[in-house]
Length: 331
Ligand SMILES: [Zn+2]
Ligand SMILES: [Zn+2]
Image: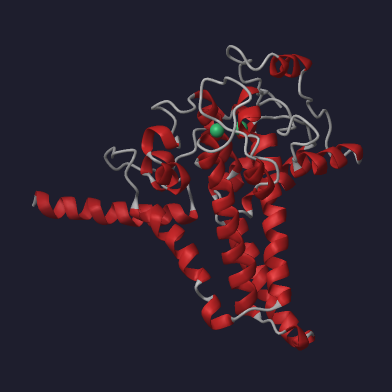
């Protein structure tokens, strides 16, 4: 009798786990599990995203499909660093509510969950960098886990709204966070439709619906994934340290190129409140240049500079701990 009851619970658990692909608010009442163990329902879509890239064997390639994939890599990498990271997680500049909603949609197209979840996880990382509490430190739980394991655990799934009260007060952001598959689904459909249309109106381009879906959505998204993940894995392992930050964050030129400026991670851990992560002209920070232009166009405002005391500290060769996280707590 009790065995059949357990089976019902197990089936209910699996059903609820799949339901959470579509509605992240479906409660998880399963018994607590090891926070460092992957959960099959999170692992499956992640593996499928990679597996779908193999579709390239059948759909082939075209210049237009590769250009769309590259363009969407740049746009979505920018959306992650400029909006999910520098705006939602650290509030390093201000924007209108309408612009903020647009930022959330653009960030959501990168298929890295909703803005509240992303910002809450990231603020947690800054509070507990490279300690046992840090969910993605390569030093405490291994490089592979820091790169692409941590978000497949059941423990990392729920959005901790208490960590992002300044964002959770906006119903439109809560909606995107709850149904975080909606925007990626619409993007995938739009790409499929674009390929279908081009095949009819411009057959000389040699593309089609399935090819555009594979390149524009799956390959481009997986590339953005792994570029983003290097900041959690390699940026705490490989590179130089200008500041003594109490964690193992590094500055790395190559990762900064790949991620449009996120590679200046030691700078960022020392002073997370500034919109720039490359603190000097030779530290290439493409995201900052675009945000600077957006500021000039008055699309955003109040871009927080690197404080003078940070440059003074850098001049003294980084002795002692840096200033605390100056993340804005209110909009
Ligand atoms: Zn970090
Ligand atoms: Zn950060």
